Length: 470
Image (cartoon, rainbow, N blue to C red; front, side, top):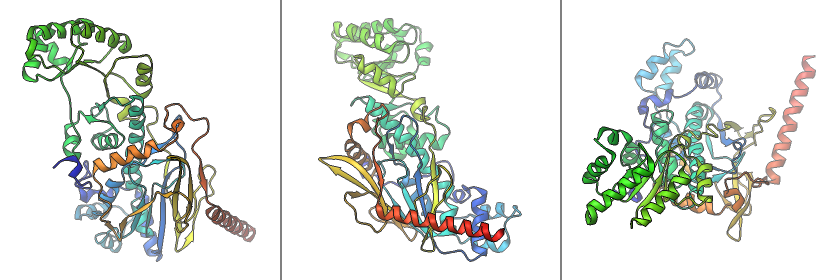
């Protein structure tokens, strides 16, 4: 099965058995679930997932991780051992545990397509479900969307800096856990990364895997030249790592091997993994070209991020591809998101917070992206039932706990969509440098009026209660 044929959502959770996912929640979600039930609070609720503000220096985020959320919600159950564990906690009575044994997610999900560029306060997804169900899944939803969104957003910057040159993920060994490593590869691929060194992720998602040799192979051989000869004998079209001892001598050894093997020399390139990559790539390119090896590519790795890649290419480094590890796999400059999952409607009535710096917009919502002359000019967040200029971003992907037929895109389709959606952004928003004027996200007049009225109602109730208690 090729990548373009491979459906997503198959065995999407890597680090937990499915029966354990129901316990991937904060303790207070369970205590609230019990309190809701015991007070008969089972009405329909809307919870909105959004990022309050972009990380410093970022102009956009790339929404990612929705597939794993849908896969998890569709199979969320409390296994017998989960119930047995919860029975050891004094907060939960037998009748509540019996109801947990029958728990299934029965709600609806509306989400932006994975790969969509998003901005502050825009819903990535909204859950519409009985309030207890929607409450219980908060931790899971935040974790899955938050991880892949921050990693896809980082990778998009790296890919942009590479200016069309392939970028390969090398970060599995430095990622923060198995789940982050494997799902990070998926997020990277959505954002445009070409391949990964992680074999498990390659198998799981149908992503190209690649890799050559490590310094240890060279150090284990009698000499660097002999190491190159032995490895090329087994893998004729390999890329040879030249910086184990002396980088430029390593390049000379590649040239010597090429002359010795003559027509049977099929090595594709060399890899620079340390040192002054600008100087070394320039000198290596000169040496290879003079030796008649202009077809050999130069692959660079070693502590790279988008800013260093951008610096190298602006300075004229003749590098053909990049391997990026730690910085991309942990999103080194922005390792977390100010992401929130908040109640915005209950029982048909809008709900919101008034906490300083923690604005929430009431009700179920839609985001409209206005495009003029092929470029996005602004987004407008409106009420769910509004019809406004632009393309609506949120679409139903799950109804009554079942994923909808159209919500099974292939990873190849998601990647292609992400590339098209990114190219629609203004040039300054696509750039690595912070924009002088952030992309405009407006609130529709109707939603703004809903917010104003609800705020007044809440403040009036607060004043009334304060007066009554006096």
